[in-house]
Length: 300
Image: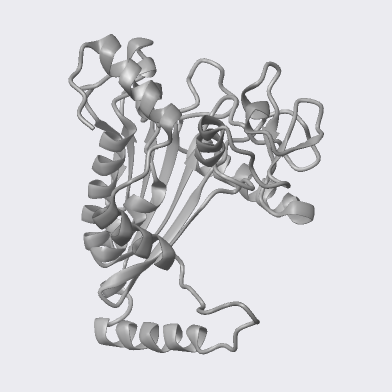
């Protein structure tokens, strides 16, 4: 789905493949990394490696990323941190028109501003990966390409009316995604604003900018080396008891199992690896059209 967006941003010189990813400032427990508009995934992986190296020595580390473009799924990086023995917290700020209205507002003023937290758990990890908006923009885009409605309570049109039509988000003038929380949306809205501070202002990426595309993200990565604070056998024992405690709760009717953060994603990934990933027809049409335009070979 993002392939067409990435190619467009390359052609507009927003994404600059091959640009050097540099550290502009560092100390034993922190660094500021400038991706110089390389692919976000390239910059984020470099930032994660720097954070891991520093946290191994100092016990914890903060790394800010700027000029790094769309990084993809934030939980991918926090998951990697956790399986390497780190607890982590990561946020992404998306400057410019982000698609989300502040609580009580109509106009787009916030990004979907995701947050991810992770911790080692057995042979895998606990991974919370969520947007501070009622839904991710990517899910709205998928529904739009499928020509399917979205659930109520996620979107408003340009006049502030509730909408289930994903096309309203991309109309002219555009609608907006609502902040997380429904009637308590001030919580999601407030959390999103603080992510703008940490991911946008402290990283130097900025907020409310109009000179960058939506994908030009600012990122904050915070890693804690668990071994510096808790002995591994103690940590593992406490985590095992905690998981058992949570899952042993009585369940309301119709609920078969209480799931941990990231558990359903791990199961879904296993299914995808054996059954493949479904691509909406409209997305495949766009990919085919793009391949033809670029003279690329495309195999189904």
